[in-house]
Length: 260
Length: 78
Length: 267
Image 1 (cartoon, chains in turn purple, red, blue):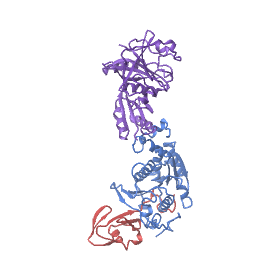
Image 2: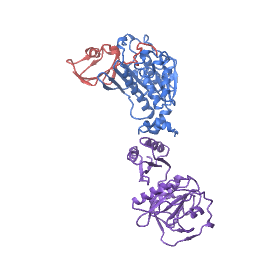
Image 3: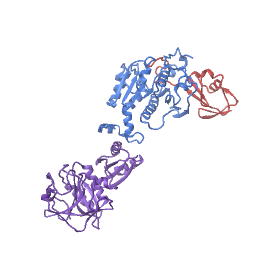
Image 4: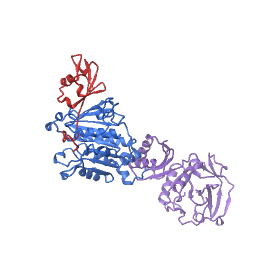
């Protein structure tokens, strides 16, 4: 099983399709759940302009059902590095949820969703899927799936399950986060790792004050008292918790919709 | 008669009392330092002798109170 | 929206946490202007709490200097301040608590010549005056200028307070038509006060000012709250505006402030 993977950390030159041999597989399409898609798209949106990256997990049916946003240790706009310690933690979390590692995703904030030479050169695991999300406006396919074996790139058909997207199952247009009804567009995000009670609630309230009614705030809260207390208080003040999910490191991700 | 005096029930063995008499009966030492509210209307001191309290009335004594109790007789902010 | 610094978030966190105050309420406090009349027993706790709350501008008017006999209850002043103007001493204490607050000191008598132009610069006034003529002067000026205020008074173990929204709720003159005759006012022997009673009453007034600025809750209007600390009983007497009030009644006879000294106003 894949544990720690060598990942690109070298600045990526402008992608050149001349160096990428591509072919359509014609085999079974990669199936992606709405939830995983939304998670990945939202992550890409909020990390922009730096690249977002993370792991993807699949269920028993081979469907990619969860995206695990991870830290881009490089915090760069044109390359990413997964943090090895986080990789172990995420793989452990994936297993503990009865899932299997399916692949790696990352975003291209300002270039198309196709592997760069570095992506190809540094893709060492032949069994993993490589999903790339682009934030370029007007891209026909904002998310694409690839298999990279021996420096050869194969694009796979991608189906977002339950998605009512224009242009068919593997042809998605427009910005990902706006296309998917379940993917709340995130208007502001705050990471409250290590921020205890009650300052975490103070920061949530300040962040909510900065967005418009009906807009969404993403919050990462520590496990324990923070996750037990903050959501309650937020709901008591009339805001809605749209999403609540535990992250691989034990912290929690909430999406809060500001009250109208 | 039974009245409500400062929010509490009070009973008097008479049918009528003037405000002055009520203040005296309640041993208010300095009537000049009290404003009297009768059924929601403030009775000013000039009318204490003429105002009659009857059964079921609600009466409140509202006392003048100063600030820091420093120079209560001062004519100016000090 | 105002950008809060990390220090401000920490300092005001206990306000921001309150649903009724929150970020918006704290912003309103920071934009608020409150005048404190008197830097004595009532004005001291009021001024300190307003400063601590981050009220944008706090004005203090007082012509007195700190005396050793003040220190039993006037907690904005210290032994080292004896002989100093009370407004300066109070301003120092306020800035020590919260350097962000802008304190405006008015070391002067409050009288008919300056009261209206002073109160109109503020959103809310705290009456912590130690004498009745000044209380009536503050009432009349606030009503004529339309500035809400909190009346407060203490004596021995008792205190009373009410909040006045000009034209909307009963005013001080609705309840007390004019200052009491000077010879009726308690003499020296009766004018003692338990120090903490000043704090009890002053903090109620400060709470009213903060509620007014933030819009939280219900103000102490059309009620006279009084308490007796000896029995530790509180009572709230319902009041209403009086049609015959000389300043806010139907036919007001007071349309301008006048210096209403104890001799002039003796009944």
